[in-house]
Length: 388
Ligand code: GLA
Image (cartoon, rainbow, N blue to C red):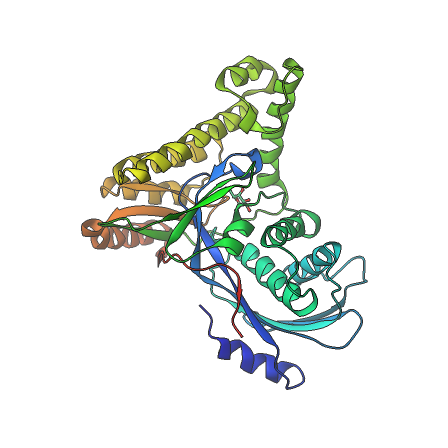
């Protein structure tokens, strides 16, 4: 986690010498349940010990925001009343969340903000949700007397992605960032929004991320295309069954998917097939965790990878290669994590195999792609909070 002092010194130096309040929010991992959130399914995320930390303070103006991205050494000032908003992609998260918090009744006025992060960008650990929930937490405290609920902050973060950043994401990332709890994964039902904390202490195993350092670009087409495919299949199933109510793929069965196979086409069919399978796998993993059967958990992770790669088509050569290395090293489970198109694999590894696996992955990846993957040991941390 970024030290408070690191951000504070820069906040003081960059603005008028005064201090504000400091907030932090984490990135996330996800054990299983990928691309299920916008399909009304289940996800199994946890917050990590890496995130975004921001110092914020009302600056006395009606609506001028002065923002400094410490890591990029980039300063952007903008007005909340400007309908276009700032161009810099990082500043759009601040602009977007401020307007979304206003919609929730928070009387946001002008403020100064400086922030830094240690969630690796583009690694699939959701640095963007970490920003949204951190800024939401700060604005709620500074201007809103903390009256906005945690769930509304989650939804404000998601709306920021939809309305200002061009990504029609689900709610997993913002949920994990806001509700995270040290040592616990969370099983969230994305339809009912009910969730449960699952203490995660896999005796004899550990979770490790291998970052391919291939950057994905979620904004715009590839992610949104997949969501559209899923929604298209639901529309066709609904048309065939006017008596039923089909809101998302969660409401659809394997038989109903088969019925519309010819009309929706191969691509949409395969995508929906992955989602239905993934829904079942999350539930199987819950049972396996309750029984302490980590070999079963791992088996499901490999199946998810295969589906994400072959049916959902969000993998890439580098991630498939990391997955193969995991398999060859006898790693219990391994799969792409997050939206895909680059980023990390998440690996469930027996402690006694860990060292050899990491060495082998680094060596072989380097031989093939000219650089080593980055290695992040997963530490499950707390969600959004005020630090001082
Ligand atoms: C991204 C999105 C999430 C989720 C995952 C895939 O991280 O922001 O809402 O859809 O991809 O599981």
